[in-house]
Image (cartoon, rainbow, N blue to C red):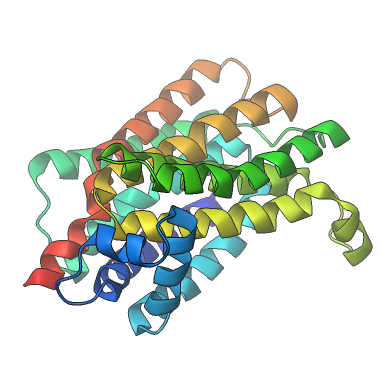
Length: 290
């Protein structure tokens, strides 16, 4: 649980830094849509061009370093905890983002938002009490290939969403990013041996690279475009619900005896609290304008 919470701290702080950098990468007076369309129209193409501009800023590089550390901690957590616990802990990174925005960027937390941070913590505490060990199933070869197919579908989904008009585009881009990160969560659990030969022969290894890379580009695009609040909410849903279901149904993740109800309640409470804090994906915008 310590590794999962450590990953949440890294990802939550990185979000604040990267949101500032990606907004600045659009240039003075540039709108989110102008930057995306000028880079080629599609979310993946525009997001990749935006990423190249953003990496020249120290805030983005610092965020990348934190993302790297968070990813290592996430892998360690997924190798010892049920997916539903890790997913809820990663969703709690929004609580970290809220606190970081309040302290580092002087964004004021309303009473309801402070309450939402407390709700997230309460949900994680319930999960900690109820969760058992990770499932012992390694996953079939068919499931490994299915995860790779899902990883390949993420950039296709992102390209399609990037061409949609209106406010729904940001939400769907965020959902696509969440699905990509969810693919990574499941694929990490499916990898059996870490030996070079075994990794090269395992479809789940390629799913980690493809799903994570596509998700990162989509998230970069979502942070810069339209409503980052709805994009962040979509990401939380995408990276928690599906992977948790896969862990329970196909990988044997279970709770402590007689405490399944507490795990379900804790998961729902933690995710609901995180969704209530989704606006902190946008918090740096106000600071940048100041």
